[in-house]
Image (cartoon, rainbow, N blue to C red):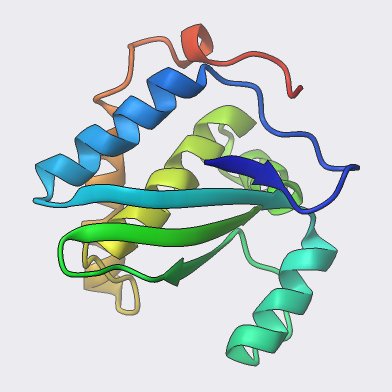
Length: 148
């Protein structure tokens, strides 16, 4: 479920079972089941190339979600730039691990049918992200370790 684009990128350190169960719980609350979701952690250079190739967008982004869902069964590759996560965390005044968790569930919410093209959709997405984050233990630090 968790991998990296190359050996120079370290998989974020978190209690994988807790995160996997959390993702499953959020999906089930939305009436979906997890088939297989693979998170690929990468750098800005890689995600920019992929964004250009896949969507013809020549810029970095925090996440690209490749939806291969079948009905209510979720299958996807979710690519996340850890560099952009760290940059955004600084901008938003959030710890990097919290921003990463938000972006990880953002991809799942897309798979569940949520969009973020308009301001109204973005507000709904943010509310759904917050609701999902609230399902985690009160102290995120309890599920987080150093990048390994």
